[in-house]
Image (cartoon, rainbow, N blue to C red; front, side, top):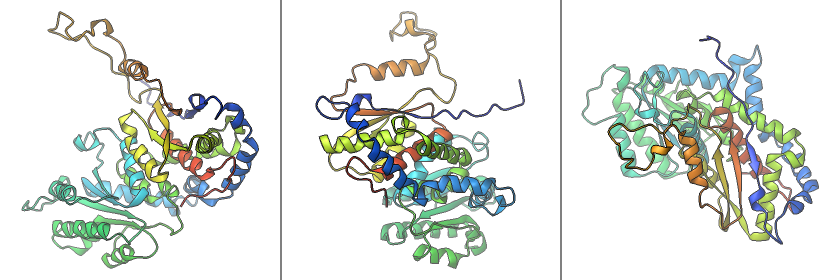
Length: 414
């Protein structure tokens, strides 16, 4: 076997709007008529510095003399320090930034990451996400896992834990209380050692507010500041999401490369071949003709958190246009239907399918009897991995930023 690792695939995602067309309403012709307005909307959006966040992070990181001073390098260094120190990490997040962190983890990490032993996790910690909605029993249950009452403190790495507090706002009393409770438990876990406590807490916060003051008081050895003007969509590619992902061993460089690739398509592709502009145009037309807004759905369980994140990014209060996110092929080798020893009478009726790849079987089942009663469009992912998920996030952010045509070309998302 060759010791040279093949270059990971970088296939583009696709957008299919053919199931949206409705007689006497939204049509391909009506979308084509919006081309000039879509072009103007693109120009407006490209004038926003927020769009280039993934590109800037990569450029700073890839600059020969500046890598060590780049934010991405600092994120990777902080993630390495956490991985080498603890086996469990609580991520306390607020708002859409916390949801993005969870969505990246659930889509790109091993589906059973927390159930694997440390060796099978590649030495990466288990991650537990809480927020933006906090629940007493859920938080207490999490503390039972990371810091069980009465358990003797020891030096074993598997008993150690840390906290990433990823919050832009300090105005949520419930989030502030949850943070204080977790920090108090961590302080007890390290025997009140303030130096060790400072090493175990990584705050990612706005430039001012209570959490920033707490971080300064603790003297945290690692911390990150998010500018106050960073909007909801922009927070996907900040330490709020990237640090927890890097701690879990997710390749955040490839994630950013996927986002940068989507930026490039948005910047360069003609309107008729531009997935962002086509999708934004469809959304605007459906809102005008049918009073619809988008709701994102997927039958792939790894993408459930991405759909939840999108609900917060683009909440809907009227009839939804369903956008299906489908995955063309699995990331790992397909399972196949096996012969079942001890069953000779074809009890489950599957003997004729022995050797059939499971993805093929699932795809056939999902398309049987699913004729849509409402218009719908589709985002097609080649697979679920870092590069594809980076594309998907940036696709959704850009589509929302365009939020354009035919009557409105004002970008913006806050």
